[in-house]
Length: 170
Length: 108
Image (cartoon, rainbow over all chains, first blue to last red; front, side, top):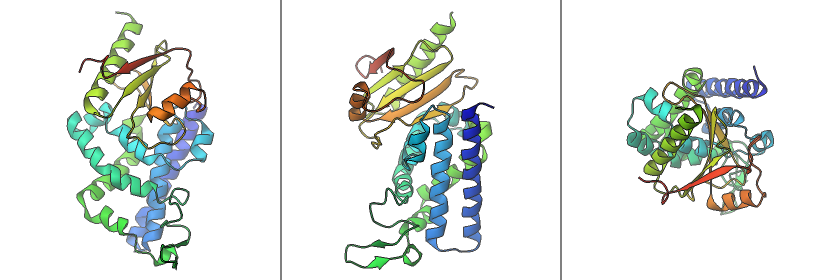
């Protein structure tokens, strides 16, 4: 295998491991902060599995957490995926565009992007001066992921992309 | 039909389709079009989140598109910065040779 293939396999393996951990938090009803932490990591590493094969510089990969929104935007026009999912191109575009706000919310969970606000890893101070721990915060995003059609669809695609990665993208 | 002609046709079909699908797409830059086995595309779109870097996603060839594709979305400002060499291109990509497509030059 070439160097980029080794990096891609490693990012994919870690994304799958994070997904397994995410699934376990579902079974055990862990706090939302832990569930979202794993989910954010799945999406970041999955996106980076595509980026590392696309000649993206490694320092851009390790130094940035903003990849998932771009990944969903690029996927919205991917023809191979359109064929695999049996969608028309305009349908695929519309469907993926509808997922972008939730994808953005997941991306912004990374503490480096959360701008001192809610994130699943570190405490923050809210506008009224109250210090909050992630474990004490409800993270309404979790509800939107589980209860809205867009959330359910986005979770389904995240699962498909990493589980069928070799078939769809290699 | 030469291999080079095929890749030009495939790339331009893809670019055409992306202009058709994405109303906010302003320009598509085909980087190093002299490559015969892979297509490197920068899509300039003001609606993509700016990152100050070029994040290029890789897609392998498949039956109906037998070329490796590497594609990144950037903002118009990021494209200007790339031209000024303030933002580096991905590994191996160069500005020695590129083609610019705009909505006006692509018939939709």
